Image 1 (spheres, rainbow, N blue to C red):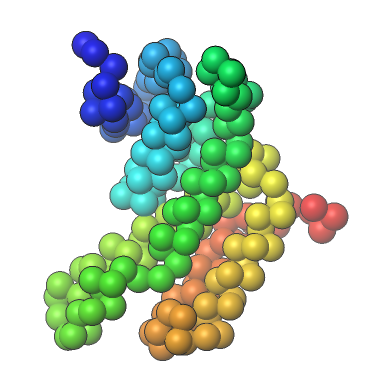
Image 2: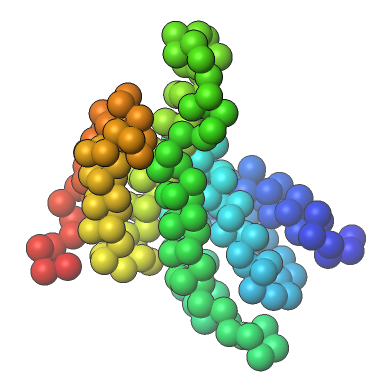
Length: 195
């Protein structure tokens, strides 16, 4: 099978879709052995991991374990002259995903009937994806994959959006405060005060 962009995405997703605690080791080995030829391939893997977390937030811990293992195994890898920093790619992925979910989509904001079933379904999908990403960032912090400096940035951004309804909408202030609580709760007091 030729290693085209579409093939890469399909093979990575096929493995991520099968991941479970019971199959973790064998699937992780297969994921690690894919023929990554550039940092773009690893960026695709990171992006797909964040998409999986958004779609399946109940597997945050397992996907964070995947990232921890990838961080240890890929660390800093060279592709020709290009050096890959996996932790940097994860940080970029966190930032991109966080910013994507910081505000509801234009489609969601444009829905007229806030009491319609379509709006409620779309809103809860957005909210669950955002909370999943918040938990994922916390899980990566707890595994020491991301710097603890990220903690302050996340809380500050969420608090800023909670205080400025023009950024996120009146109804979103409560959601942003909920995100802060979920983030702090997910960290569980495990980061020390000097961190």
